[in-house]
Length: 273
Image (cartoon, rainbow, N blue to C red; front, side, top):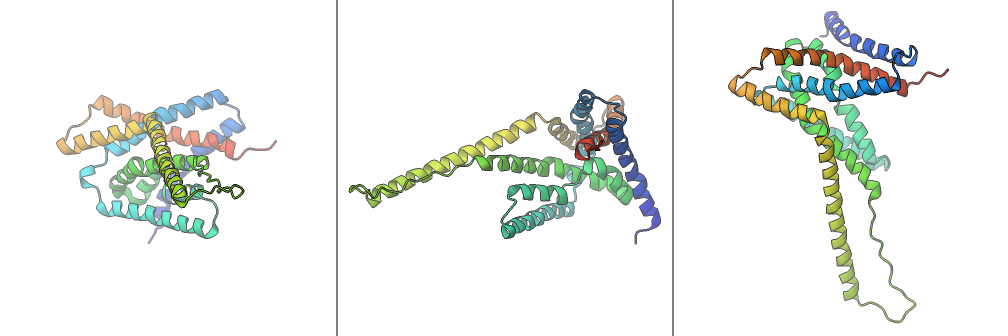
């Protein structure tokens, strides 16, 4: 039974985020406090510092030795069912393609847990949130976001695919190819097509790898995983000066991230003069 106190806690935790977004929106759209160059600088700070440090703080607090297998299984089943449902819809409607699967998976199973989920889950689950939230963000950062990036690159490569065109044998000339020669040509074309498919897949994986390498959140995720394994295995703690620095940057990072989202609302919901 959800009580009014629970609703109050959820509203108290989430409304400040939307207030920050709204302030960012009116600051850019109506008050003109930030130029496009300044907005770009804020976005770069959020992408390179705020969000990675916030990810590191949450992931490093996850005890990987005591992760809930039920939560892992439920997360995998959720993604698998969503994938099958959207695939079936695309098969039935015969439209949309891989783009619909990517959008459907993102909207239904990959919420912005890092920004909105932290205050929301803490308000809903209190002490249990400190155990569940790091595990959910860990799975998203290590597994699902990387798979989603692979699907994006695969979708971008699909239009470039070209099927080999086989010219029909000429009926005007008296010399016709024997069935053995035709079969040999088909085998060569099939082998060439398999080679091209492997090459395309290798190029896609290389693009995904390059994007992961230049993404600061990738380093934050792996460093957080390494530190969590050290901390919960041998009980080693961070120096207070490092811990406090991360705490300040992570706390400010949540506000900066929501502020950055609010600025982008200017592009989604333009005000007509």
